[in-house]
Image (cartoon, rainbow, N blue to C red; front, side, top):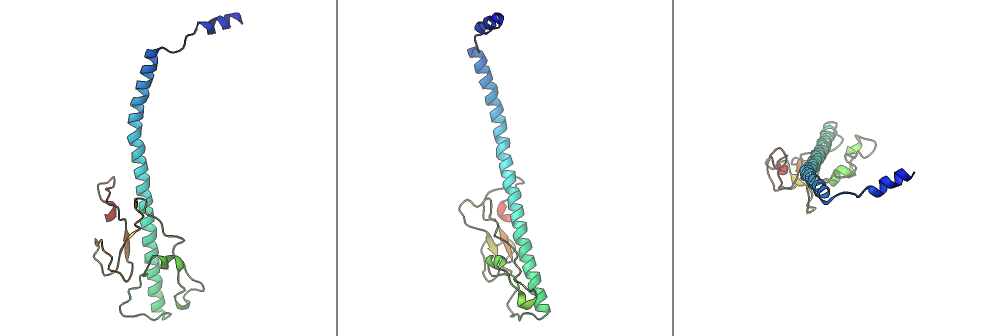
Length: 163
């Protein structure tokens, strides 16, 4: 036991040079890891944006398909200027029974997914059936498509508002 105590008393700890070298190595590793972490966060948000757009667009298509089916089966009466797309995104949450096409109100979304790049809580950009495919101004009336209003550029070099 006395040999162990003598060995412990003889140790002095780390020298200043060892500490400086250790800190230099850690700082080099940190500067290499930080950009990779930022890229991972951006990639994750892009995946969430793609998923949200796909979810809303699929719900819009299903809504339109049910409208067309209900019109074809004469469950609802249609007007000449109606496209069959919802007038608001809330209609996808509230649902519709389509004049008895369903025994219940068919709901297309539980909630409206949020845009992960929407820093100012502006919501989704909307396009009506009459709007141009790349329009950034909603013509009103119905919702044919949604897009991100973010001006940021994706990892693939395309702006998010063109996805």
